[in-house]
Amino acid sequence: MATHWEEFYSSHLPPIDFEDNRKLLQEFCERHNENNEKIVLITSGGTTVPLEHNTVRFVDNFSAGTRGAASAEYFLEHGYVTIFMHRLKSLEPFTRHFNGQKFMDMLDLNERGPNTTITVRPDGVDVLAPILSRYKAAQDNGRILYVNFTTVSDYFWLLRAVCECLAQFGARALLYLAAAVSDFYVPANQIPTHKMQSGGGPPNIQLQLVPKLLAPLVSLWVPLAFVVSFKLETDESILISKSRDALNKYKHKLVVGNMLQTRRTKVVFVTPDNNYELILSREQVHNGMEIEEIIVSNVVANHLDYIKIQKY
Ligand code: PAZ
Image 1 (cartoon, protein in one colour):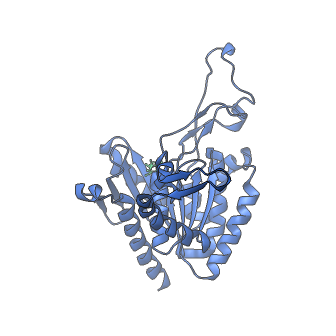
Image 2 (cartoon, helix red, strand yellow):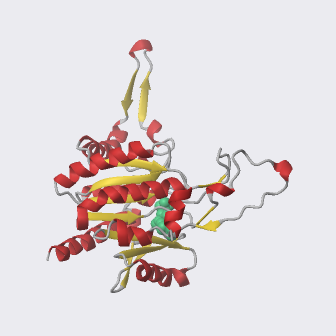
Image 3 (spheres, protein in one colour):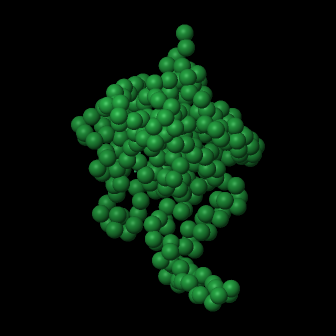
């Protein structure tokens, strides 16, 4: 009998650019595996749930991809090659620092007809230079690959394809699953082809549970990898118990629990042995420190210990 997740794949088509992405992933992983690199997959941003095949309306969630985009920069600093699997148009590493009007405000325009030039203001250079330098290092040395998804079904297809490529890294692969993946969806065979019409009265939309991909991911796809999942709650009294339930059920290495309201300054690490909090102090916040810096260095320390144990 097919499992819930197998049924999902057999009833949802892969995204249009799936084969192109698969080739990029294979090439990227083979090249870096030959060099014995450590690799991280970061998933980031929220998935959508379309309500029509020609999608005008969809269910979405709050995630902007801040956690994933910031974490990618810190993993690169720790020497990891990085697959950044993100929601299309969500935040990306490096460019995230220049959202909105910030970038335009750093530039000066000198209009001289065909000789018009654009220069970066001196105070902009101080901000841009260090970020540009890290961006170029990652890009020019081919250390980061960007792949994107929009719907929960795109996410499923891409995640499995990435895992197929990561398996060859064994314990050197780290999965950092920070995307906010919908728990509910409407199966493809239950949504209309065209835009829903209000003339038909209020629509009756029946959401179903999405299969939990962590189960095959941990036990079948990348059994040697160091897998970290994130758990978001809004009710603090259930955060640790839900995180531990996930760890017990899927038997991966670490759950990072966070509350919607405090996720920028506080997380809890739930491991098979214990729980501990990582908290940014007021002073650290004031100095512009990001919690992802400490999350990533703690995750990396745990991953390095794990690699050592696997070798003996
Ligand atoms: O994208 P963001 O920085 O605004 O939020 C990050 C987050 C809360 C989505 C992430 O830390 C997380 O908890 N992801 C898993 C969500 C869940 O499925 O429980």
